Amino acid sequence: MSIHKEVYKRITVKTLTDMKSKNEKISMLTAYDYTMAQIVDGSGIDVILVGDSASNVMAGHETTLPITLDQMIYHASSVIRGVNRSLVVVDLPFGTYQSDSKEALRSAIRIMKESGAHSVKLEGGKEIKDSIKRIINAGIPVMGHLGLTPQSIYKFGTYTVRAKEEAEAAKLIQDAKMLEKVGCFAIVLEKIPAKLAATISKTLSIPVIGIGAGSEVDGQVLVLHDMLGMTKQFNPRFLRRYLSLYDDMSKAISQYSKDVKTKNFPNKEEQY
Ligand code: KIV
Image (cartoon, rainbow, N blue to C red; front, side):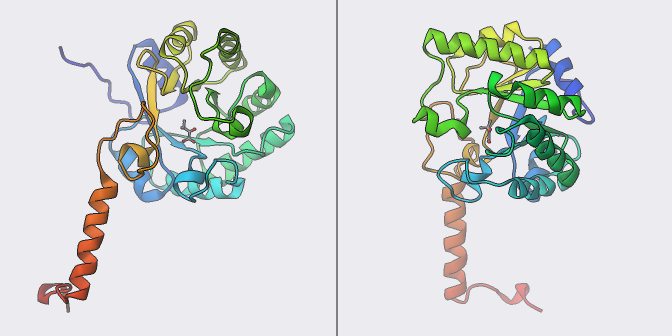
């Protein structure tokens, strides 16, 4: 059976809705810099997320909480310079949208204006409804994020699967419906039972992108450095590693060091 795949020139929020209605899966990966963004975009990924996971992956923090708005704008503007086709979504970092909706809008506007990004992502449900509405009213597309929301890690206490209990699952469904109603163009569901994610995906007409949420959703997202095997410490069940770059890069770097020390590099052809 051949897989029909349309060739989209530039991905917009409308493209994603069209893809869902045609039952075409959406691919999404993170990127935080120009070089990686060029590779990801050129490889045909539909959506690039400039995630606040940059706080972990790029800066080495334990959580996503420390990354600042200025730092997210720096990452996002680097990514934008490497992108021709993908839709670029940028996380509003912790502390830049929770206190009131005006602050949320100011933060979203800074991201759009200073980085050239195409949309923003916010974590949470009804608690941030006013902020999401205000941002969308200003013409900025918003992606929601429910389930495991890493900016609330100190409230949860652990990174385990969310919404296993009925009450939390019911709230999650309510929040997902609300996000669609206020105008989010898509939502991310992180680390929730596959059955619950499938129900939400069927209930909503906007695309649902999963990470650790099973296969019955409209698309998948992973952290680029994790799926390339550049990180070693993070081993959740949902992560598929497509390469072992940590080991391959270590080998190459050790070989270079050896070549320098043994005067094997540079050779005659590698000099002027
Ligand atoms: O910051 C991030 O990388 C994310 C994904 C895990 C969805 O929010």
